[in-house]
Image 1 (tube, rainbow, N blue to C red):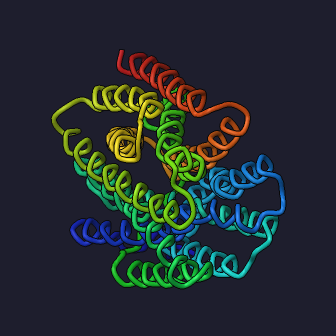
Image 2 (cartoon, rainbow, N blue to C red; image 1 turned 30 degrees about the vertical axis):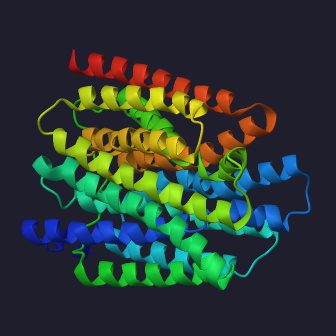
Length: 394
């Protein structure tokens, strides 16, 4: 009965070394979720028997629905770490995700694909457990940096997945990316099993001073809108590229390249902002990054070609990507798995809301309305977050 209490706590040096393999495992999860992002809208257009307007709405549901379920599941996964060993949960969730994803590769019905994506989403919140493992292993002075590594590994999976998925489709067909993704995820599970040291279950603890419910709520909101900025684009790339006179296989390849470039910029921006967190107040960095990203979001409408669009999008994602780990780091040592799960759910809500918002607004309005809406949400959530921070520090 006392085995969980008596479990030997890992040596801090070994624990911090294992953090890099936690991040590597998160790469596999992100790759699995995102390798379909560049080709799935084109595939849906190809197999759909619905009208164009209905097909666009189906695309939004399929692309974003899984993240909505993951958002609901993320706090649940975090709360489970109070009773079950986090490493065991992490590995089990990855395995189930891989099996469901593999089955999806042999489906060609839009309702069935949506159903599988929603089931997959139930296991999508396991990234919360990665955050719990990091929070339980990293020293406080390096917590923001390690959460930045975790975020960058996630972004790297988002970066590598779309172009590999797109090129695999053009070379080997629709099922190939699902087989590749399963292989990557199995390797991630093996790395986690071999190198990541376990930690005892984290009991539900009281929030420490400074972690007010209001502050956590607005931190969640800022994470959500930051993720919307990162993830809204893939579901409407066919329509954007059509405006630049690109269609067919050329458009598919171009979509993968654009996503690869701006996600690489997100990794660089995340690294730079997190690096500056030891020399500059977190709130100042967050305000700067959000304001620049919001302005560039509006300027996307003025781009007159693929090059200009990609350049603006790359700088925009470079700014907004660093906001997410900075906000999480500011609360990571102030609560247990449930708090981290709630904050992490903001990413999944953003993942879901991004494509749904993009496809819905584009189906009924135009690109300018979409860009202004996202920029306005960013400014509103930033203002609320800053008010709560001033109250907390004042």
